[in-house]
Length: 195
Image (cartoon, rainbow, N blue to C red; front, side, top):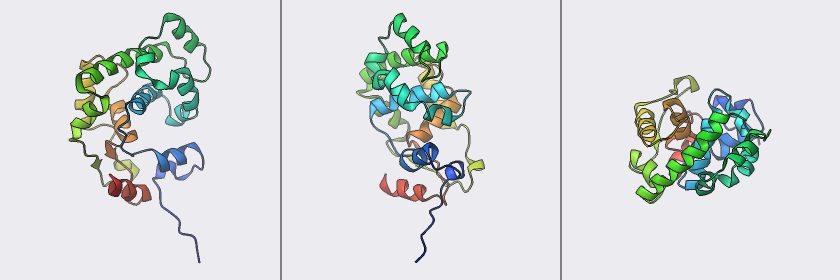
């Protein structure tokens, strides 16, 4: 009997480490937990101008440096904490990105107050249902959409930074607002059937 080889998205196919685990376990899976949503907003913002693997390799360091991504804690970071973060070699030491994370934590808390949770706010854009795309190849997947334009625009209006439409779309893919696994990937069907 031969082993069945599962097809996966081309961007993860040549990896047997972090990318593959991220692809197989997290990417495209709908997230409703506010702490995880804040983590992904922060990491996607940190990734701007860099490769995603650069951030994945530092994810554990980010979790430690940013106190588990608890928005109420991050929103109250002092100048002393900013200096500590700027000296932390485990994260991207970019002053603008660090300050953005702190600012975004404050805006995140305001949305929680207004909507009961950030998850409620975010998922209302798709009426609580993930968008299941049917792309055949990775090259068909857009960098942004009208929906990412709308979410990004609304969040920027609410004071978020480092959250343009391209970052927003990557965030939407990461937290399962859209299922962008190609249709030949085993995760496309698994996620679509589960959610």
